[in-house]
Length: 213
Ligand SMILES: Cc1cc2nc3c(=O)[nH]c(=O)nc-3n(C[C@H](O)[C@H](O)[C@H](O)COP(=O)(O)O)c2cc1C
Image (tube, rainbow, N blue to C red):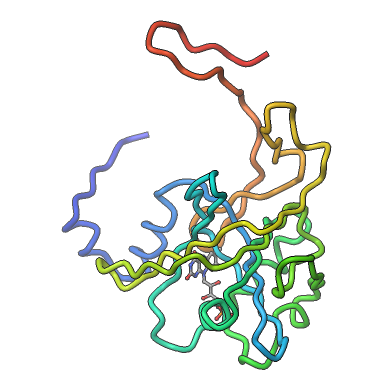
């Protein structure tokens, strides 16, 4: 395959839809998750996000990037109003419903009802989880950091509780997510099945790379 080079001017010179697909895809495979929220009156909302990022383990913090809020956005508004939300990883058999949650439904239409996904409630979080999701986090809002560069926001939450199949947890704490049938995402419309390659021992300068048994 012939390599092609793009510089900033090339990227910015492209038509906006091309740039959107290109820059959303080229950064690599990402996690795909559904963020579940509820209004103060209990009305539920669900939307797909692929910018979920590990912020820290102690305390356990997870972040995601929210686009600039130029029109009212339910996820963002509900998180600000209630301080709680859920992150639900997407499995193969719920990919179509998960993708459909990105449609611009009217505020009074719950994406749970619209897509047929099932809301369930945990013990510590008022926001709904997605019953079909095998790995689910309940979070309390920690902070919302505005990103000056482009008007987006980094939304950071502290994990209050989480649910996953027990048999996926290995002795050292590693979770074999590929056995949960989860999908990875590229861009804003492509979903993939991750295949495990290898786990490696902790890298040290004086030792060659070692595969875990
Ligand atoms: C695959 C995929 C990934 C998405 N990731 C994000 C994201 O990381 N951040 C974001 O702000 N919007 C993202 N969106 C768009 C939201 O899903 C969309 O704006 C949705 O309507 C928000 O719903 P709400 O208004 O109910 O909060 C993504 C859409 C798709 C299809």
